Amino acid sequence: MKYSFSKRVQSVESSVVREILKLTQGKSIISFAGGLPADEWFPVDAMRVAAERVFNQGPQALQYGLTEGVTALRESISQRMAANRNIHADVNEILVTSGSQQALDLYVRALLDPGDVVLVEDPTYLACLQVLGMNEARVIPVESDDFGMLPDDLEQKLKQYNPKFVYVVPTFSNPTGRVWSLERREALLRLCREQETLILEDDPYGDISFTSNKVPTIASLEGKQADRIVAYTSTFSKTVAPGLRTGWVVADKRIINMMAKVKQSSDLHSSVLDQLILVEMLNPAVFNIDDHIHKLAAVYKERMETMAAELKNDLWKNARWNLPQGGMFFWVELPEGLHADSLLKCAVEKGVAFVPGKPFYASEAKRNTLRLNYSFAEPSVIRTGMSRLSEAVSEFTARSSD
Ligand code: PMP
Image 1 (cartoon, rainbow, N blue to C red):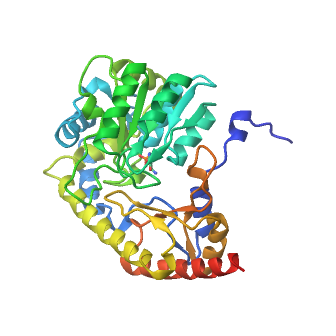
Image 2: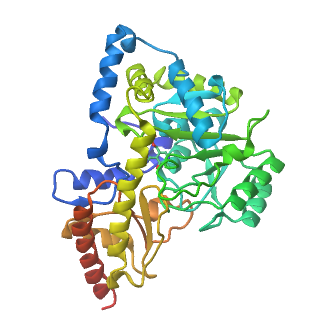
Image 3: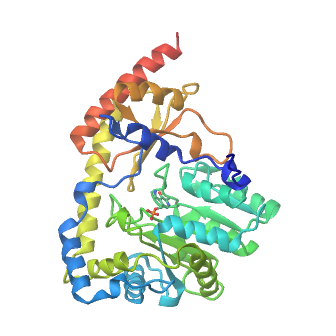
């Protein structure tokens, strides 16, 4: 039997990160590849108490629920976003999704026809590129530097392509760890307003901040107004646990309603049990989530600094890398001509893995780039992994210059 899969599915490659995760499973390989949170910091005890409280309320946690999400959770999200992000949204402007990944998918499916243009940073979040590919978008990268998209290139491409929307990860981005400056955020908003182009702001890492400097979200710069152009999505994956698969999106009510329609056809609603547990986890009598986030940021900062210390090793002196102010990733540029995908093979032989930069690019990739995750492994493991990786780099560099 020859199965004839859709062109759409065949044209999109499976996530490289997932492939690498498969490769490393069950082996004693130290992986800096996945974007995994530190599992020893999952609030298991509080979650047990929260679940107990949910089951004590009766069987409703196991019943079908509203597509838009559990109302009490949407209320808590609305309050937290007002307090922490200066984003003001009514409950009916919030849709609970199965992770922010689903928010990206629903947004794209609600708005895009095949061939419609979407502007993105380059490199950008690879699983969003997958969603765009699955939906036959025409993806156009905008030139970017360490402060965000370059306004001149953005303006020119907005005019040339009349895109449906611009997708950005402006705070501690995946993969670059970059934080857009306030000026670039304002420029994006102004230019998109002028062209009546929508913006999708993806902010899963905003809470994981290593400094007290807070750059406002693009959604908060726009404020609460009629005909909003910004849709904002975030998640409990990095602050509580990704296994709960719970994220949310805030947008104009008309967009939320259309996304809810798509969601109905996809999964009816996200898990009521997970949502009710989160309602309890956001109840200060059960769990202090702000305190937890604070601790988590301190743990990740230490891990980031451990990895940074290793990258300062002489072997890396010709590489360029950012010093993350938050989030979970280093983005490394090796000297020109050193291909990260070939380095990966050598690294896996040494017992360490990372993700080559190639799949994050919407245009021609810089093959000498790679992403390193520092949130998952403990400092001693980071040191061992980095020493293996440095060895691989050293051998690889010597081999490449033979
Ligand atoms: N957006 C970005 C930029 C991400 O890095 C991730 C997680 N890897 C997601 C969205 C999806 O996260 P989740 O579905 O777990 O909320």
